[in-house]
Amino acid sequence: QSALTQPASVSGSPGQSITISCSGTRSDVGYYNYVSWYQQHPGTAPKLMVFDVSHRPSGVSNRFSGSKSGVTASLTISGLQAEDEAVYYCSAYTSSNTLVFGGGTKLTVL
Amino acid sequence: EGQLVESGGVVVQPGGSLRLSCAASGFTFEDYAMHWVRQAPGKGLEWVSLINWDGTTTYYVDSVKGRFTISRDNNKNSLYLQMNSLRIEDTALYYCAKGRAVITPLERWGQGTLVTVSS
View 1 (cartoon, rainbow over the protein chains, first blue to last red):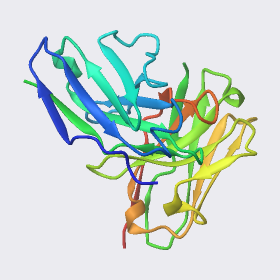
View 2: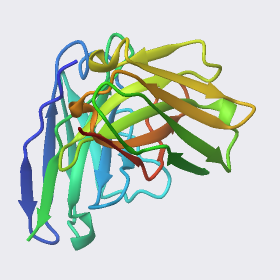
View 3: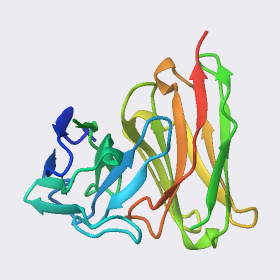
View 4: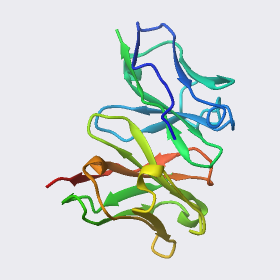
């Protein structure tokens, strides 16, 4: 049950695109297509942004997109906006049906 | 979408016990699997436990196995986490969250309740 690996920080200017990676193993990211991404602003609860690798919940902007290749998942945010500045966490279910999160990536909008 | 409200977080000594509660409203509680996720101060998210819709299936992170017990009362629309043999490293904000089934995304989270383990 080791945490998934994410970069500690990424940054981009308004209007640009950024991608956050999430690396795991064949027992988690590579096992199911059940990778999710959560956004957390300071002092608030996490919010689901992408689920099942590439699906967006109702109400989430189509600027957020997800993908996966092998044991690495990615979240891309296009057309960066100031409100996107937050910490982003990936998660994946494991072969044991437990859940593991990544360490989180702080996105700074310059 | 509904609402989740956690309660029960307090300051407790190492080795002590505590029961957290999560009150659900605005959705059909028994239709959902439920999770506990924690976040130590200034740290990332750590999944703690999961229970299926009727309480017959549970899962735990290794670090809490044998110490924590997740349970639910669908008649009271409530989720619980019994925490025993608490350690300093259990200090965290504890969130409850709901998912459509056992291995589905956490689609709605509460605001959390703070557990501090300190002597």
